[in-house]
Image 1 (cartoon, rainbow, N blue to C red):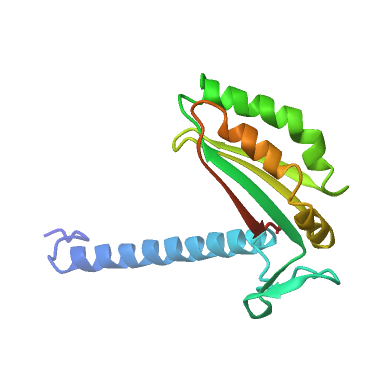
Image 2: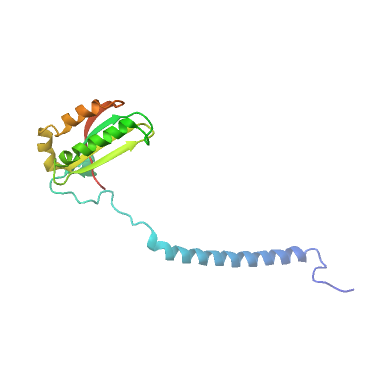
Length: 174
């Protein structure tokens, strides 16, 4: 009568369980080692936690939101709706010509003026945003945001232009 290793029915499950335990333990140890290596090597790429408000406030900045933000630049926005597809719109083309005509005068609002043009092809919005330092905004506002009145009058005369509006807002690069 030969005895085999697997001759008894209870040996097979025990051997299998022992093999599984050994394999699982080895796999888990290898996985943990790999995870630890990856975690320590990629820590250099993790974002650094910063306080919610770290930007330097200029000496003439105006605080907002209990000091959580501030501004020292003010923007005057001129906006309207145009008609047609953005790629072929005749009204948008005429607006562009008007901007080109007035851009030197608009930039004269301040030596530090920035002018941004925004066009939305989906909702047919056109916006021209002129941002100046806070100390330059007061004099520009007193002049009626020159050349705003003349520019808006010509803008309203363009066929296909509607809803001509203005707004004064802060505009900060953060």
